[in-house]
Structure formats: structure tokens, C-alpha cells
Image (tube, rainbow over all chains, first blue to last red; front, side):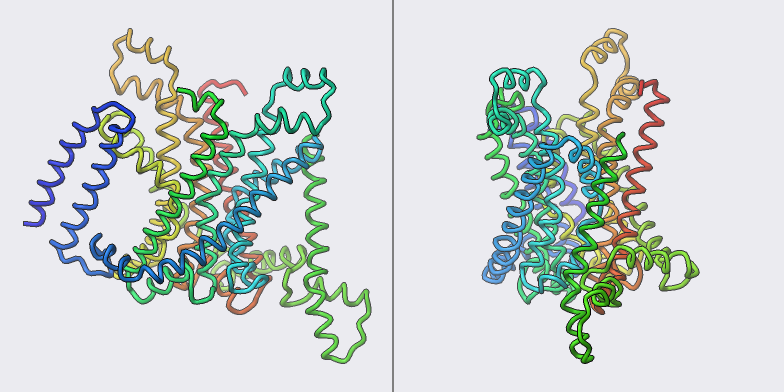
Length: 277
Length: 286
């Protein structure tokens, strides 16, 4: 019975989505992905209820929503601890440090040639692993999580900004030399504007990285509040509806964070070919 | 000429590291001396900060010694051998890398050929990049544990999950980046869709695929390590990190970190070599 109804829903959904996928238009083209998301949620609910899947395996979407409504206070506290304190602080410091280092590196080609390969190497390393060390140095509270976020976000920013500062063409540099522009003027009037798309790429890459860093760092020890702490302890207690509720909050926070950065990018790089339609 | 700047910057970093270890461990050592009733003497104190058994920041030579001791001098089967732990993590990472890459490539192929999938699924895959997928690790471990699976499989699945998204996105970009002119030419030859795929789309996607694979390889190692954290696994690099942080064994933490770094740098390096070899076979000029 459950299998049958799930099959019927899936077929109807697939037909509907194929229809919706043909619609053109800026707002209307969102119909297909939204329909797909709704279809997945309905199938999830039907299958979990029909087969009476135990909570330990997979709670139904309705159970997760109920848990979110019931524990909104705890969810907010965890969000404030992890996102508002650790992630935002670490993100600001890490991106700022990477940016300043890149400007320094740009002054000296020698430094740049040495720093870039090392920055690339570090960007490929499992930086999250420094979490236990950060906890040892900066204590259990959000400072240690912010430190992990700083370590994770600095190098992508450094590598991208350095590439961006070198992106202005030789012709444009020569023109500014012809105007007898000071290095500072060249930086502000030519290199930084040319580097904006690169800087925003790093800002976008770093947004989810920062969230991951803060959550994983909490697995190594934290005060009794925070999204990573809650995920680890509730998973150990097999209260998976609470874990999923935290995941939903993390996903929403991550998407919103990314979305804000992407909007800022559109506003700041309106001149770039990829934004012209 | 490329080596000199890198060497200089590396040397500066090592010197900074030594300076930082002296600075950070100073308090620990002078406290111990005060407790022992010794008068602190500058040179002895510096020497001790660099050779403390449980330092706040171990000096580079201590980390290298520990890596050497726990890889080369212990038998591979020993539970204290880092090779043993590294292999446990690496096998999970590699299995996950394989599964995730395969799934990503298959999905990308489907997405580029079926319009409804492209419109309905692609926005979700792109959006998923903004989601901290790694936070799902405890759920996967617990749910699979309830089904009776433990050991390699949950870790591999998390690693696969992390690999899947970058590979799918990179591959879709790659498959759609084929040269318009080449595609038009193939149309005039009335080439079938599979011919277009194998002769044009797939080769032109390789640079994108390899860029994604390098990201995915690093992510797979991170995934396998983090998957060992929430359950308190007994073996693996993540378990070494956790044990080290419980017992304050900083040198052990740094050694495990170093091995993890070597693992992911090696994987990325191997992929770069493979990419170059493939490009040469396909006739690319270096």
C-alpha cells in the first residue's frame, strides 16, 4: 500500500516537473526546483510513515518541524553561540587577514611567488584538524571556534585576492604609470576594482567553510550550548529529530549567509560581464 | 628560480614556528622551574621550551621526531603506529572518493542530457554547496550504526557525500563547456548523442573534472577524519586527534595532523600527475 502510493506520487510528481521544466521566465523557472523539493518532502513523509521507520534511522519531516517549533528557544541559543559569535567573528578576522596579507604580498613579487604555492598547499590541507589545538589554546568557549574559522578562511582569501590583484592587464598598469600614479593610487583605482570578483569568490567559498569549521570544532569540546555540541550530544542520545532540526538551522544559516554575500557581489560587481544580461 | 621564494617563505615560517613555541611554552616551563625551586636560567629555559613533553606548541623537530617514531620504528600492525591509523582513514577516504566521484559524474551526465533534471535538480545541487554537509556526519554514523553497519562504510559514505557535490557541479560545467563550433560540426556529421558525448563533451570536461577531483580528494580526507569524531572511533587519524585532545598529548595531535596533511597533499599531487599524463595522451601541448 505504501509502496503503491509512493510510486503514484513519484510518477505524478515526475510528470508535473517535466511540464514545469519547460516554462521559461525568471520567476517561473523556479517552479520546477520548488516542485522537486516538495516532491522529495512528500515522498520522505509517506515512506517514513508507511513503513514506520524508527526515529533512530530517519525522522519524518513533520516530526522535525514539530521538534523545531517545540525547541525553538534552544535552537536560537545554539545559533547565537555558533553562528553569531564564532562564525561571524572568525569569518571577519580570517577574510580580513587574508586580504591584508595579499596586499602585502602584492608589494613584493618575491614574497608572492613564495607565498602562493604555500597558500595553495594549505588550502588543500585538512585545516579543521587544528580544532583540538585551538580548544587547548583558546578555551572551550566560542573563541577557539572562531580561531579555527580564522585558520580555515585566511588561505582561500589570500590565494584568491593575490590572483585578483594581479588580474589587471599590463596595458592598464602602463596607463596608470603614464599618469605617474602612486602605488597606493594604482591599488585603489585599478587593482582592487579588478580584484573584486576574485575577492567575492573567496568570500563565497569561505561562507560554508566557516560554518563547517565552527560546527566541527565544537565536536572537540564546547560549553553546553552550540550547534555542533547539540548535534554530537543529541546524536549520541539517538534523538535524531533534534539533530535534524539543528541541520535544518545550519542549512538555512549557510544558505542565507551565502545568499547575502552573493547579493553583495551583484551590487559590487555590477560591471562584470557575468552580471550583464 | 621558482624554488628560492618558496624556500625563503618556508624558512620564515619555520623560524616563526620556533619563536612561537618558545613564547607559548615559556610560561609552562618557568612555572615548572618555580615549583622545583630552580632559578630560571635563560638558555636552559629556551632548551626546555623546545623539548617539553606536553608543550602548548611543540617545536617542528619534536613533531618530525614523533612522526618518524610512530611510523618508521613501530611495526605497522601496532595500535600505536601512525601508518595503521593513517591507512584506516585513507581507506575510508579512498572508498568514499570513488563512490562520490562515480555518483557525481553519473548525475552530471544525466543532468546534461535530461532537461527536466537540469531545471529541477541543478538549483538544489548548487544550493547544497552553501550547506555544511559535514554536520550530517553524526547522523550518518548513528543511523548506519542502528542498522548494524560500522567501521569503514559510514566513514566512506560521509567522504562520498562531500566528494559528490563538487564533482557533480564541476562535471556539469565541464560537459556544457564543449566548444560550440565543434558541437555544430558534429551535428553536420549527424553524430549520435553518445558519439558527441565520447568524442567532444567528455574530453572537454576533463580540466573541470580534475579541478573538482582535487577539491574532492581533500574533502574526502576531511570527511573521513571528521566521521571518526562524534562516535569516538577507536582507530584512525580522527581518533588520534580526539585521544590526543582528551589526554593533552599535543605532540601526538600535531603528528596526526602532519600525517593527514601529507595524505591529502599526496592525493592532490597524484591527481595532478594523472591530469598531466592524460592531457599529454590526448595531445595537449604542455
